[in-house]
Amino acid sequence: MSRESVLSHRAIKQRDDTVSELTLAEATENIYASLRADNADLDAHIATLKAALAREGKKQAVFDPARLVQNNRAGRKLMQAYFRQRGVSVGFSG
Image (cartoon, rainbow, N blue to C red; front, side, top):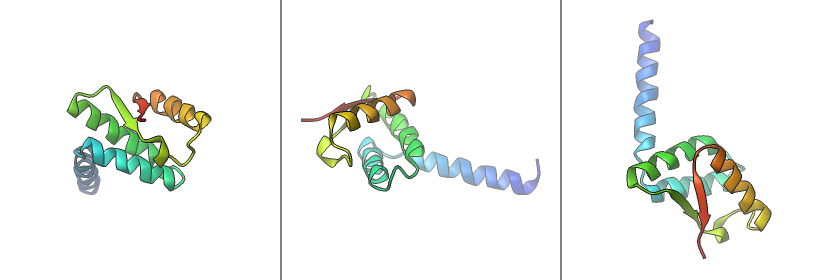
């Protein structure tokens, strides 16, 4: 492995460690922001959310339906299915 690839691997690992240390609330806020931004980096934010759930010993991420871009039954079911495929159970408050 070249010196350059080792350095870039370390930078990526360090960035991944920083991202994965977000709190559950911060990870949830990032999901809301991603949904508003047409799902930009959604898979990365879901992975961060999954790590935050595991750290905090929670089984399910809870979202406020009023803050969702597509707040109807079809939108909520689509979100649940997409997150479930990535290993995150989703519930909705209220």
